[in-house]
Structure formats: C-alpha cells, structure tokens
Image (tube, chains in turn green, blue):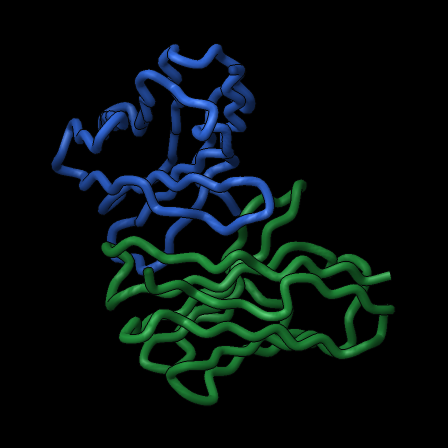
Amino acid sequence: DARVTQTPRHKVTEMGQEVTMRCQPILGHNTVFWYRQTMMQGLELLAYFRNRAPLDDSGMPKDRFSAEMPDATLATLKIQPSEPRDSAVYFCASGLTRGHQPQHFGDGTRLSIL
Amino acid sequence: SQQGEEDPQALSIQEGENATMNCSYKTSINNLQWYRQNSGRGLVHLILIRSNEREKHSGRLRVTLDTSKKSSSLLITASRAADTASYFCATLGIGNEKLTFGTGTRLTIIP
C-alpha cells in the first residue's frame, strides 16, 4: 500500500529554534497539502501545492512559516523561530489533481515547543 | 475556519449496535467526504458523496446527503471495537479546491 511518509514523527524543542518537517507524498500524486491539528482549532489547512508550485498559503503565518517542494518526492514545512503556540500535530496529505479526489494523509509530526 | 459541525461530539455504543453521526455545513458544496482518524494516526478517507447524490454505501458504511438542509449523516452498522476512532466530515465548496473539515465525532465502541 502506497503511503504518505512524514518525518520526524515527534519533535520537542525550545522556543526560538528552527523546526523542519518533511513529507514524502505518494508517488504520482501531484497535489500536496499541509494541515495543522489542535484541540482548539481542529484541522486547519496551512498551504498546498500542485505540481510542486504553491497555490495557496493563506492559512500559514507568513512571518515564521514557510513551505516548499524542492522536488516531487519531498515537501517541507519550516518554522523559524518557533513559538509555544506552534505546538500541534502537523499533517501532510497528497492527492491527484483536484479536490474531488480523496486525500491521503501521513501519520503526522507531533510538535511540542517548550 | 471550519465549515462542518459534527454531532454528537462524542458517542459510546455497545459492539454490534449501529452508530450514526451527523454533519452540518454552511455553503454549497461540490462533494462531501468522510474520514476516520485513529488515535495518533493520520486521517483515512472512507467515502465520498457528490452533491447530486443522496445516498451511498460502502461495506458497513452508509452516507446520506441532504443539500437542502446542508447536512449529511454517516451510519456504521454492526459496529466493531476496531471502529473506535474520530470521524470527520469534509466539504469541497463549489469552485474551491480546498477541503474544509468539521470538528469531528469521537466514537467509542464498548466490547
């Protein structure tokens, strides 16, 4: 079974540090999404890419977050500098073409900022 | 922001019983999808229903959609302990490419 792979699964770091989360989408999927899940806000879309081009990052705090797709097999989400309020589970999902298709999620990166 | 609101927030039933979860949304949609999330894992797609469909089945799952009421329901028949998870509805708005997820229903199946 093809799967979306996210690394690391867990990350604990102190505020002010840079955090990089990585995602390997399912081979052949051309759309990649980054979500953040918290108890208070639920699941929020941060950004998404199609064919490696960023289409929408309006859900992302611009001053500290950045998302890129260096190649078709790797998507990254960076936070610099990190803050305690960034503590959450970050999910990557991939899919085909338009949102009509289901999204396939990785198991997430659980991030704790102390 | 979340468009979908699930009801109830939490549900506990005995194994073998049927579980029904409801989802309400606010704007017109292209389709509505249901996902399951086991503890500590990512979301798994269960079923997709298009705006011109009223009912869809997949195994023990039955989904209904009422676009006039902007609501959907997910029925899991003959529940099993392995069905214990959180269930989310997600809507794709017309002319939109982004899914908007609901708040989720936490389902517990008691063996």
